[in-house]
Image 1 (cartoon, rainbow, N blue to C red):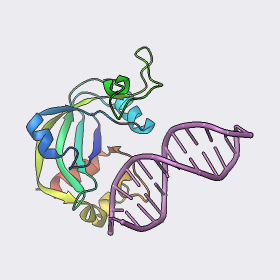
Image 2: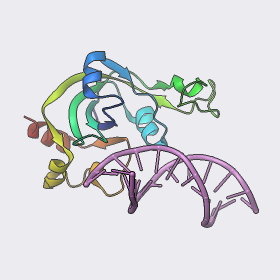
Image 3: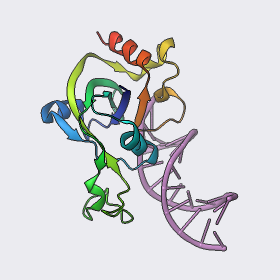
Image 4: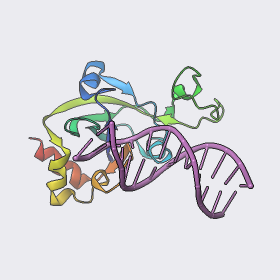
Length: 151
DNA sequence: GCCAACGTTGGC
DNA sequence: GCCAACGTTGGC
């Protein structure tokens, strides 16, 4: 089983929205590295930290779980969608996604500045300079440390 | 609102 | 294949 961090802007889709919906399609990812993680590496049951970006404060707010196999993001075929990709075809889809389901909200969200203070977390991609990737792998050690921190 | 860092596009 | 121009991300 693997561990992940997935970013979302709370004014677009927050942990509360996920709690309400129970599960969601993680559509709209248009970055190859992030796509490859979903398409090639994610498996059902993988654990996900739900991260609020462009928030006040930004930080990890909840836990979710991968609950589908990867499949084509259908917004790439939808001319009316802002995620429409004219180069994608049904025969050769370019963008894949997974579904994630709500697990829980953290008792205490972990704000970004707190993450930066932790020696144990200093190698997280999230806090490397210029790192913008919206889906990132997390190590088991980091997962457990952050989980404890939130209690 | 600013802007640094990064990814993508497209002309050559 | 190079690289300038452009668009986006996301913290501050």
